[in-house]
Each structure stands twice: as structure tokens, then as C-alpha cells.
Length: 106
Image (cartoon, rainbow, N blue to C red; front, side, top):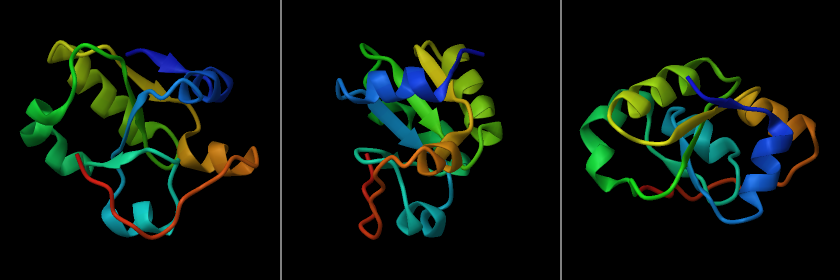
């Protein structure tokens, strides 16, 4: 699995990368990384056709466990997928902005 540190993700995020949040919708709505699209872990396998294979995909969850498993899955499916170490929890702890409400889906 390819993992990226929070600092690497912050740098990549500033360039407008693809971010998939694999948490359940209620958690996503409670606070997520700006620009992240909600595709819960259980639904990701049936929705890979919606993802852009030509660009890296950054997968995020609360802390990095689920995103690691889903980044592995996407990598096996031919995506350049990266799991964000520390997830949304680390993003928020670093004082980064979050979006609440609106459910953005791919």
C-alpha cells in the first residue's frame, strides 16, 4: 500500500487532487476535507468506474485504517491510490479547514 504523510497530503491537496472519503455519510457530513467526495468503504468496489484512473486518488478515513484497506483495493484495481496517514483526525488536529454538511458524491 502507498501511504502519504499528512504533510505530503497537504501539499498535494493544494494542487486539487482527487480525494475519496471512505467514512460513513454521517461522519463525512460532520466534517471532511474540502473537495473530498464521499464513497463509503462498503460502496467503493461497486463505484470504481466513477473514478478518474489518470490521476492519483487520495483515500482518507478517520485515522488511516479503512483508507489503507481501500487504497490497497484500488491499487490492485489499477489505480494510483494513496492512503492518508492519520486521516481526517490528523487533518483537523493540524488546524486544517473542514467542510460540514453537504454530502458530495462522485
